[in-house]
Image (tube, rainbow, N blue to C red; front, side, top):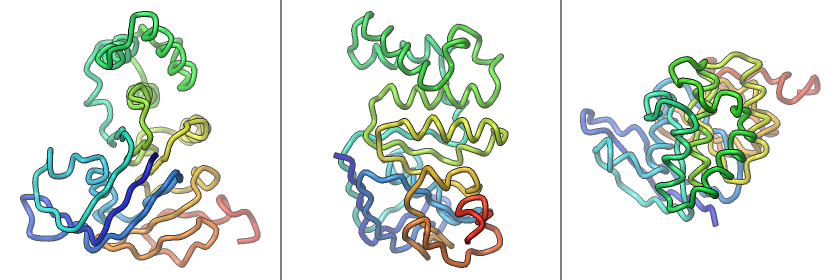
Length: 232
């Protein structure tokens, strides 16, 4: 089961009187969804609420209801700050062993994840010597090591070049989980996601299929011809 449901959701941070999310009603079930919107629209905050971090870590106030069925894993935009061990192998081994896996199971999972993310050749290199794209893959591998039903990615294309972005899309296409991506650079993911949720000033202004795109505000980067082809 991988169900997310929000009912009339409001959220604000402890340092602000402004509600960052206002009246959010969503139901996501075994889908791949992009949450789009300009800076300050509430994309990141929505992922923090779904992951359970919003009130527990950031404090603040929340009204309404949030129901999440299934295990979540969240990869923030500043993912490299959360890699704690000196190498990717040690990072993955630590997370996997903490789940009670045996040494043999840990090694098998490291092989599986490193092959999926294309990081086998850098498993024993210092994290500090890896590129941002490679570090991001380590962070995603760490998230997937939790066997999540729901994978949350906050602006995953912010620190990688176009080639890396396309490779990441191909990797994510092979992940068996509900995937929710908060992003405003949407040129890469037209074939990956099925559904667009558009946030504007904390309110859902569009929620529908990717092929039924409305006129978007200028601060949303959406080259339609790259996503829908020349017939758009």
